[in-house]
Amino acid sequence: MKKTMLKGMAALCVCVAFVSCSHDLEYDPSIANKQKELSYEQTFIKQFGQVSPNQEWDFTKSIARTRAGEEAAKIEELGFNTSGQSTSNYLWIWKWKYSDPSKGVLNQNTFDNLYNNNLDAIKSAIESAEYTDWNPSQYKNVYYRVFAVSQDGASKSYQRFGIHLPSGKNYWLAQGNPNKDDWSKGTLYMDHTRYLDFTQLPQGTSWFVISQKADGTTPNKKIKASEYELITFKEVTVNIDGKDYTFWAFNCNRDESDVADMILWVEAEKKPIEKIVEKRYMAEDLGGNGDIDFNDVVFDIVETSDGVQTCYLRALGGTLDLAIYVNNTLYWRKSTSETPKFDVKTMYNTGYNNTTIDFVEPIATFTVEGWDDNANNVSLAVWGDGVQNDAVTYIKFPMKGATPRMIAISTKKHWQKEKVGVPNMDWFYQLDEE
Picture 1 (tube, rainbow, N blue to C red):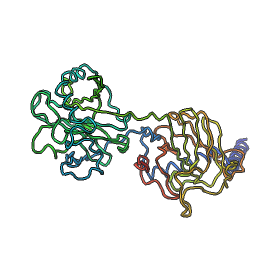
Picture 2: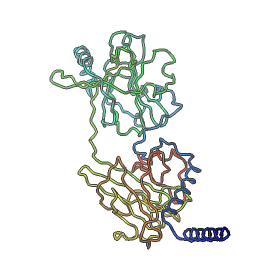
Picture 3: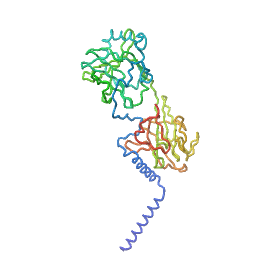
Picture 4: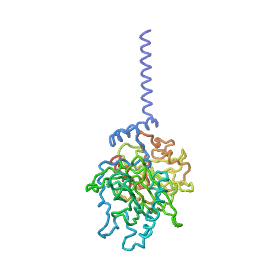
């Protein structure tokens, strides 16, 4: 009896083993998909390192990273020009010079009237105003001139307003060097009007205000602009003799009294509000586990102010059939596209075999609905050669901290050529167009 039972158990084990092996020989898409994901994850980690649990994969919402080693903010670097040389290469240009005090934006005659006869009224309006958030992105063309500065009870010092560029350099846009404890006119390169197009400043520009003691080393003293970040300011408009004049006021020394110690006259043109939302999606490893160039699929979605959403297909680096979904709805498939038609096993617009990449014209365009740029509700389904009934790979936008097979980036970011891998994580932050 015991021998019979052992034989029966052995036979059962053989049967189970045979069934298991037979099952392994069959194609299970869920198992295959998990194996691909595991292989890709290992490749990704080898290339970029372990993914931080706080890593977001929508780079359009990433805050510019803090840059170390900021350079000294020198007056000479801004190009304060007293030699008469051309200012065409500077960030700003002169809009008034004292060769003719009757002409220009806020000419000298108008300035003298404002300062000599209306300073108290302007100061009173500023003192009664509330500080508001500094938001330079709302401005385009800005004319400005130092109107008045004060030591605010401190020792003689420079009051300064400037920018920190992504290149690592700091530049003074305006400065005042008061010669007494009370208010005084802006002097020292500041007695004229300047013009600056805020929209021409590179992405990642930050702003700062600072009060520095007026000594021989101050102009060359190194500062870290992030420690003097401009966060709030006052903006007031005062009607004088039937005309409105606008002033910006900054608390440069950040003292407890919260009193502004630099006043600029400004004429600031607000930037037109562009009600356009756009984002580029790049996907990688639809079916393999080799290179990581994020060009297997590249497509943009653009929503205009009237709510119309359009998808622009840019590149296809995969040789498999695939479909693009938006809000769980299929809108485009490679094997069934009619206008234009695509060959499933052909790559398009990736520079394959040294072909030219067109970063301007899309390879297909179609309308979509239900796209949420905050939720990134886009996904991909991948078939093998296009004849399978069911997709074998599904790619959704990754959660925070996951290994990404899809990322979101600015539409000003170009994709890599075929087989040219993404070099490092910083690549995702660097735009290719101004």
